Image 1 (cartoon, one colour):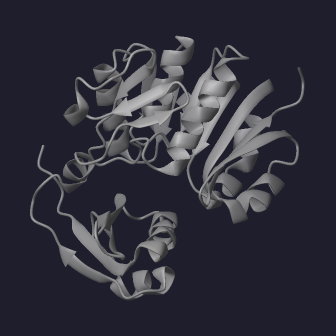
Image 2 (cartoon, one colour):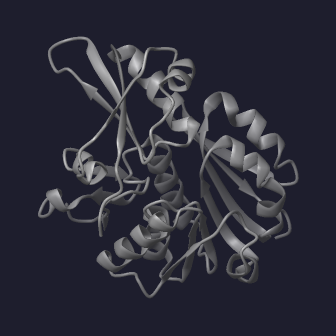
Image 3 (tube, helix red, strand yellow):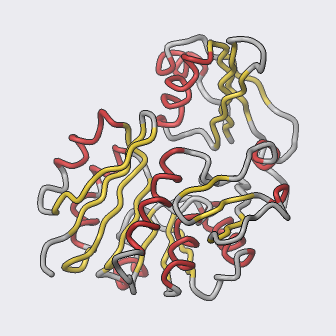
Amino acid sequence: MTNPPLWKASIALTKLEAGDAAAALELDGSAQAVLIVEEPFADGAVVEALYTEAPDAAYLSRIAGRAVTVAPLPDQDWIRLSQEGLPPVRAGRFFVYGAHDAGTVPHGVIAMKIEAGLAFGTGHHETTALCLSVLSELARERNFRNVLDLGCGTGLLAIGAAKLWKRPVLASDIDPVAVEVTRENARANCVAPLVRAVTADGLTNPILANGAPYDLLIANILAGPLTQLAPSITKALAPGAMLVLSGLLRNQEALVTSFYRSLRFIGRRRNGPWSALVLEKPGR
Protein backbone atom coordinates (compact mmCIF):
# COMPACT_ATOMS: atom_id res chain seq x y z
CA MET A 1 0.00 0.00 0.00
CA THR A 2 1.34 3.45 -0.89
CA ASN A 3 1.92 5.58 2.17
CA PRO A 4 0.06 8.92 2.21
CA PRO A 5 2.22 12.05 2.06
CA LEU A 6 3.15 13.35 5.49
CA TRP A 7 3.95 16.77 6.88
CA LYS A 8 6.10 17.45 9.93
CA ALA A 9 5.59 20.31 12.38
CA SER A 10 8.61 21.08 14.57
CA ILE A 11 9.08 23.16 17.71
CA ALA A 12 12.51 23.85 19.22
CA LEU A 13 12.45 24.46 23.00
CA THR A 14 13.91 23.27 26.29
CA LYS A 15 13.40 19.80 27.73
CA LEU A 16 11.29 21.27 30.53
CA GLU A 17 8.95 22.94 28.05
CA ALA A 18 8.67 19.98 25.68
CA GLY A 19 6.00 18.08 27.60
CA ASP A 20 3.48 20.91 27.60
CA ALA A 21 4.04 21.66 23.91
CA ALA A 22 3.64 17.99 22.98
CA ALA A 23 0.45 17.76 25.06
CA ALA A 24 -1.00 20.80 23.27
CA LEU A 25 -0.40 19.24 19.86
CA GLU A 26 -1.81 15.88 20.98
CA LEU A 27 -4.95 17.46 22.41
CA ASP A 28 -5.59 19.22 19.09
CA GLY A 29 -6.32 15.73 17.75
CA SER A 30 -5.22 16.22 14.13
CA ALA A 31 -1.65 14.87 14.45
CA GLN A 32 -0.98 11.24 13.54
CA ALA A 33 1.91 11.08 16.02
CA VAL A 34 3.69 13.46 18.39
CA LEU A 35 7.30 12.82 19.43
CA ILE A 36 9.83 14.51 21.70
CA VAL A 37 13.46 14.34 20.55
CA GLU A 38 15.85 15.36 23.33
CA GLU A 39 19.47 16.36 22.99
CA PRO A 40 21.49 13.95 25.15
CA PHE A 41 24.12 16.44 26.36
CA ALA A 42 22.18 19.71 26.31
CA ASP A 43 18.94 21.21 27.57
CA GLY A 44 17.41 21.43 24.11
CA ALA A 45 14.56 19.37 22.70
CA VAL A 46 12.44 19.29 19.56
CA VAL A 47 8.75 18.38 19.53
CA GLU A 48 7.75 16.84 16.21
CA ALA A 49 4.19 16.15 15.04
CA LEU A 50 3.26 14.25 11.88
CA TYR A 51 0.20 15.07 9.75
CA THR A 52 -1.41 13.57 6.67
CA GLU A 53 -2.36 17.05 5.44
CA ALA A 54 -0.41 20.30 5.64
CA PRO A 55 -1.26 21.87 9.03
CA ASP A 56 -1.66 25.58 9.67
CA ALA A 57 1.66 26.69 11.19
CA ALA A 58 0.16 29.88 12.64
CA TYR A 59 -2.64 27.93 14.36
CA LEU A 60 -0.18 25.37 15.77
CA SER A 61 2.05 28.18 17.02
CA ARG A 62 -0.90 29.68 18.91
CA ILE A 63 -1.92 26.46 20.65
CA ALA A 64 1.67 25.45 21.42
CA GLY A 65 2.75 28.90 22.57
CA ARG A 66 5.93 28.63 20.49
CA ALA A 67 6.94 29.19 16.89
CA VAL A 68 6.14 26.09 14.80
CA THR A 69 7.72 25.27 11.45
CA VAL A 70 5.99 23.00 8.94
CA ALA A 71 7.64 21.06 6.12
CA PRO A 72 6.69 18.10 3.87
CA LEU A 73 8.37 14.72 4.37
CA PRO A 74 9.55 12.26 1.72
CA ASP A 75 7.40 9.24 0.90
CA GLN A 76 8.38 6.96 3.77
CA ASP A 77 6.47 5.33 6.61
CA TRP A 78 7.73 7.89 9.11
CA ILE A 79 5.33 6.94 11.87
CA ARG A 80 6.49 3.33 11.78
CA LEU A 81 10.11 4.42 11.58
CA SER A 82 9.64 6.73 14.54
CA GLN A 83 8.53 3.79 16.69
CA GLU A 84 11.65 1.75 15.98
CA GLY A 85 13.78 3.68 18.45
CA LEU A 86 11.24 3.44 21.28
CA PRO A 87 11.96 1.06 24.17
CA PRO A 88 9.50 -1.61 25.34
CA VAL A 89 6.86 -0.57 27.87
CA ARG A 90 5.91 -2.28 31.14
CA ALA A 91 2.40 -1.40 32.32
CA GLY A 92 0.74 -3.58 34.91
CA ARG A 93 1.05 -7.20 33.75
CA PHE A 94 1.71 -6.12 30.18
CA PHE A 95 4.94 -5.88 28.20
CA VAL A 96 4.48 -3.94 24.97
CA TYR A 97 7.18 -4.16 22.33
CA GLY A 98 7.83 -3.65 18.63
CA ALA A 99 9.39 -5.89 16.00
CA HIS A 100 12.81 -4.38 16.76
CA ASP A 101 12.54 -5.73 20.35
CA ALA A 102 12.05 -9.38 19.33
CA GLY A 103 13.87 -11.67 21.73
CA THR A 104 13.78 -9.26 24.67
CA VAL A 105 10.42 -10.30 26.17
CA PRO A 106 10.85 -11.26 29.86
CA HIS A 107 9.12 -14.21 31.50
CA GLY A 108 5.92 -13.84 33.50
CA VAL A 109 4.35 -11.00 31.48
CA ILE A 110 1.49 -10.64 29.02
CA ALA A 111 3.43 -9.78 25.90
CA MET A 112 1.95 -7.67 23.12
CA LYS A 113 3.76 -6.93 19.88
CA ILE A 114 2.35 -3.68 18.54
CA GLU A 115 3.27 -1.85 15.35
CA ALA A 116 1.81 1.64 15.10
CA GLY A 117 1.62 2.13 11.34
CA LEU A 118 -0.62 5.18 10.94
CA ALA A 119 -2.55 4.68 14.19
CA PHE A 120 -2.12 5.96 17.76
CA GLY A 121 -1.31 3.66 20.64
CA THR A 122 1.98 1.85 21.23
CA GLY A 123 1.83 2.01 25.03
CA HIS A 124 4.44 4.77 25.18
CA HIS A 125 1.91 7.52 25.74
CA GLU A 126 0.99 7.94 29.39
CA THR A 127 -2.74 7.52 28.80
CA THR A 128 -2.31 4.16 27.05
CA ALA A 129 0.00 2.87 29.78
CA LEU A 130 -2.46 4.10 32.42
CA CYS A 131 -5.30 2.16 30.78
CA LEU A 132 -3.21 -1.00 30.60
CA SER A 133 -2.43 -0.68 34.32
CA VAL A 134 -6.12 -0.23 35.09
CA LEU A 135 -7.04 -3.32 33.06
CA SER A 136 -4.43 -5.33 34.97
CA GLU A 137 -5.96 -4.21 38.27
CA LEU A 138 -9.53 -4.92 37.15
CA ALA A 139 -8.53 -8.44 36.07
CA ARG A 140 -7.64 -9.28 39.68
CA GLU A 141 -11.24 -8.68 40.76
CA ARG A 142 -13.56 -9.10 37.78
CA ASN A 143 -14.18 -11.30 34.79
CA PHE A 144 -15.69 -9.37 31.88
CA ARG A 145 -17.66 -11.04 29.09
CA ASN A 146 -18.58 -8.13 26.80
CA VAL A 147 -15.90 -5.49 26.23
CA LEU A 148 -15.78 -2.43 23.95
CA ASP A 149 -12.62 -0.45 23.16
CA LEU A 150 -14.01 2.84 21.84
CA GLY A 151 -11.42 4.73 19.77
CA CYS A 152 -9.08 1.75 19.54
CA GLY A 153 -6.15 3.24 17.59
CA THR A 154 -3.70 0.36 17.16
CA GLY A 155 -6.01 -1.98 19.08
CA LEU A 156 -3.58 -2.25 21.99
CA LEU A 157 -6.25 -2.04 24.71
CA ALA A 158 -8.64 -4.37 22.90
CA ILE A 159 -5.85 -6.91 22.45
CA GLY A 160 -4.89 -6.55 26.11
CA ALA A 161 -8.49 -7.18 27.18
CA ALA A 162 -8.73 -10.23 24.92
CA LYS A 163 -5.55 -11.65 26.43
CA LEU A 164 -6.72 -10.99 29.99
CA TRP A 165 -10.24 -12.40 29.78
CA LYS A 166 -10.09 -14.70 26.75
CA ARG A 167 -13.42 -13.27 25.60
CA PRO A 168 -14.55 -11.53 22.40
CA VAL A 169 -13.76 -7.81 22.36
CA LEU A 170 -15.28 -5.20 20.06
CA ALA A 171 -12.92 -2.43 18.94
CA SER A 172 -14.00 0.68 17.05
CA ASP A 173 -12.36 3.76 15.60
CA ILE A 174 -13.50 6.63 13.40
CA ASP A 175 -10.36 6.12 11.27
CA PRO A 176 -10.51 3.10 8.89
CA VAL A 177 -6.69 2.99 8.84
CA ALA A 178 -6.67 2.47 12.61
CA VAL A 179 -9.23 -0.32 12.22
CA GLU A 180 -7.00 -2.11 9.70
CA VAL A 181 -3.95 -1.65 11.97
CA THR A 182 -5.99 -3.13 14.85
CA ARG A 183 -6.82 -6.18 12.75
CA GLU A 184 -3.17 -6.64 11.77
CA ASN A 185 -2.03 -6.34 15.39
CA ALA A 186 -4.72 -8.76 16.57
CA ARG A 187 -3.45 -11.32 14.05
CA ALA A 188 0.16 -10.72 15.12
CA ASN A 189 -0.82 -11.35 18.75
CA CYS A 190 -2.87 -14.48 18.00
CA VAL A 191 -6.17 -13.00 19.18
CA ALA A 192 -7.74 -12.26 15.79
CA PRO A 193 -10.70 -14.60 16.52
CA LEU A 194 -11.46 -12.58 19.66
CA VAL A 195 -11.02 -8.99 18.42
CA ARG A 196 -13.59 -7.57 16.01
CA ALA A 197 -12.60 -4.13 14.69
CA VAL A 198 -15.11 -1.84 13.00
CA THR A 199 -15.08 1.69 11.63
CA ALA A 200 -17.58 3.74 13.64
CA ASP A 201 -18.19 7.32 14.76
CA GLY A 202 -19.31 7.18 18.37
CA LEU A 203 -21.79 4.47 19.36
CA THR A 204 -24.46 4.98 16.71
CA ASN A 205 -23.04 2.27 14.44
CA PRO A 206 -25.50 -0.69 14.39
CA ILE A 207 -22.74 -3.16 15.31
CA LEU A 208 -21.85 -1.18 18.44
CA ALA A 209 -25.51 -0.56 19.30
CA ASN A 210 -26.41 -4.24 18.92
CA GLY A 211 -23.38 -5.26 20.98
CA ALA A 212 -24.58 -3.30 24.02
CA PRO A 213 -24.90 -3.44 26.92
CA TYR A 214 -21.19 -3.75 27.74
CA ASP A 215 -19.85 -4.81 31.11
CA LEU A 216 -16.51 -3.08 30.39
CA LEU A 217 -16.06 -0.06 28.15
CA ILE A 218 -12.68 1.59 27.54
CA ALA A 219 -12.50 5.03 25.91
CA ASN A 220 -8.96 6.40 25.61
CA ILE A 221 -9.83 9.40 23.49
CA LEU A 222 -9.87 13.13 24.34
CA ALA A 223 -11.78 15.17 26.92
CA GLY A 224 -14.01 16.78 24.28
CA PRO A 225 -15.32 13.52 22.77
CA LEU A 226 -15.63 12.00 26.26
CA THR A 227 -18.03 14.76 27.28
CA GLN A 228 -19.93 14.73 23.97
CA LEU A 229 -20.36 10.94 24.05
CA ALA A 230 -21.23 10.73 27.75
CA PRO A 231 -24.98 10.06 27.28
CA SER A 232 -24.46 7.29 24.70
CA ILE A 233 -21.54 5.76 26.63
CA THR A 234 -23.55 5.67 29.85
CA LYS A 235 -26.54 4.15 28.04
CA ALA A 236 -24.33 1.44 26.51
CA LEU A 237 -23.20 0.19 29.94
CA ALA A 238 -24.84 -2.77 31.66
CA PRO A 239 -25.78 -2.46 35.35
CA GLY A 240 -22.60 -3.00 37.36
CA ALA A 241 -20.40 -2.30 34.33
CA MET A 242 -16.99 -0.68 34.61
CA LEU A 243 -15.94 2.34 32.54
CA VAL A 244 -12.34 3.44 31.92
CA LEU A 245 -11.90 6.95 30.52
CA SER A 246 -8.58 8.44 29.48
CA GLY A 247 -6.96 10.81 27.02
CA LEU A 248 -7.56 13.66 29.44
CA LEU A 249 -5.34 15.94 31.52
CA ARG A 250 -5.47 16.25 35.31
CA ASN A 251 -7.12 19.64 35.07
CA GLN A 252 -9.88 18.10 32.93
CA GLU A 253 -10.85 15.39 35.45
CA ALA A 254 -13.62 17.39 37.13
CA LEU A 255 -15.08 18.50 33.80
CA VAL A 256 -15.21 14.97 32.36
CA THR A 257 -16.50 13.43 35.59
CA SER A 258 -19.34 15.99 35.73
CA PHE A 259 -20.78 14.47 32.53
CA TYR A 260 -20.93 11.02 34.16
CA ARG A 261 -22.70 11.98 37.40
CA SER A 262 -25.02 8.96 37.18
CA LEU A 263 -22.00 6.66 37.56
CA ARG A 264 -20.10 5.83 40.73
CA PHE A 265 -16.57 7.21 40.83
CA ILE A 266 -14.13 4.40 41.68
CA GLY A 267 -10.77 6.09 41.34
CA ARG A 268 -8.19 7.71 39.12
CA ARG A 269 -4.68 6.93 37.93
CA ARG A 270 -2.21 9.65 37.01
CA ASN A 271 1.07 9.84 35.14
CA GLY A 272 2.57 13.29 34.68
CA PRO A 273 -0.16 15.64 33.44
CA TRP A 274 -2.35 12.77 32.18
CA SER A 275 -5.16 10.89 33.91
CA ALA A 276 -7.36 7.82 33.63
CA LEU A 277 -10.71 7.66 35.41
CA VAL A 278 -12.46 4.49 36.58
CA LEU A 279 -16.24 4.55 37.09
CA GLU A 280 -18.98 1.99 37.70
CA LYS A 281 -22.62 1.97 36.66
CA PRO A 282 -24.86 1.24 39.69
CA GLY A 283 -27.14 -1.71 39.67
CA ARG A 284 -25.22 -4.73 40.90
